[in-house]
View: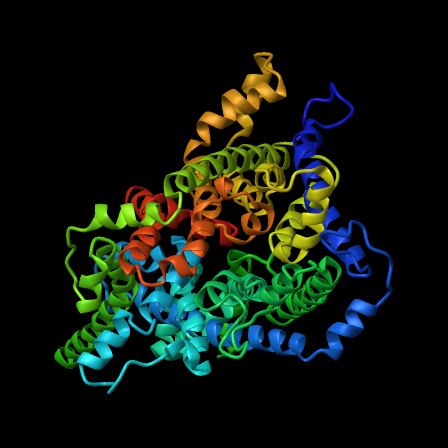
Length: 318
Length: 281
């Protein structure tokens, strides 16, 4: 669609101008600035620090605190993403199953999505209170006879981590389900009809048609969840003391960055180094996920059409 | 043969509904406990669980304020920020998307793809570069750092582009051009009225996003009277409230209720919007 030629510069560029300026100032510049700061000994009070080369990074990798925080983040993220995608696939498959014909799908979906809108800080504080020494969970466990005396849940590494995982799953499973469902409903029904004619069962249809065609969507979910997961902060920060207790077992990379920033001197340089390393790691893993699961720009319909064509081509032989 | 098939369907249906009910309880019970406990006195809460509200809400509220937590102020701050964020995000997302959808120029496709990539950059990891930049501008402890960057909101722009691409605008725009309308005027008086449903959807997401945002305000703001609700939640975790459970629950509940109300009235917009942001049609 050609635009009138009365101006040399397309008005399209003018509409993009605010975004471009905003992005340069508040997107690109902070990234560059963080990288620059990571090579300095800048503190909050001390103004601009001096260049100290890779000292922040060598100190970071010499300290076992940093690998532990990165490890905690990855461990918790992996244990979140498995049930998150698992439940999303299961629920989406059940809701779109014609034979089961589940009633009031819209209502179930709406309820399961609700946690995604609630303030993560408040939810973390809520669970911290629910699982407190005098909290309702202890009251219930003791009165029902499951425990002989109240338990300090937040002093148990396994339970605390499990709570971070559960809360984050609770916040995200409904949102993931809706995205997966939208992907499933855009798969043409003819594919399933053809498979049924060929005698495929429900499981074969799921693994041979649904899953391959969902690959672009799953890649999108994996990458956004991973980028979000590497920045995990609110829930583990507010669940216990803000430093990742018990024994730093829920201290994430972002929390470590905050702790360095919030130290008495405010080591912005050292904290930036944490941000830089995690930023690069996240970017590499994101590219890796896209590389293995197919890129995002390939949309569902296109790959569906392709597989339809392939299917037609393969038909005569089978 | 047919009856065993039917029986099988009924049995699987039973287990599916059982699973759905269990998940429903997992979602609802924590929120319900929170809201109910906000109306119960600390003594009642210590006596045991209850699923029905009590009568101590006003008492809890006064207790909350008496300990120095300015909840009405926090509510006002959060409302102001969420409303301004919504306005800036929605307006500029549609401005940018309009430029990408309506005009053809060199690099249009590349810019569109680039914006998709931008939605996946972990920006919170660059908060310190951002903080230092804001400090140099003298903008720390103000609301500017929470609002101005929303001009370049990649996620919102992506959504707006999806939305505008699905609308057929070109004929209308050509007609308006023949009538002599300028490009900006066409954007404001032809496109915007037609895009209202999309703007509402994006607006709800922007509002909720700002309302729930904890990390950026936590880094940027330092004066108590400027604190937002999530920051007050963090303060409530402090020692003054350690044993005042009723007040804590009420404070947490008040920060959730506005969003729950929005959701009850607008869930349809919201759910259709999530799928739209994720799938290219």
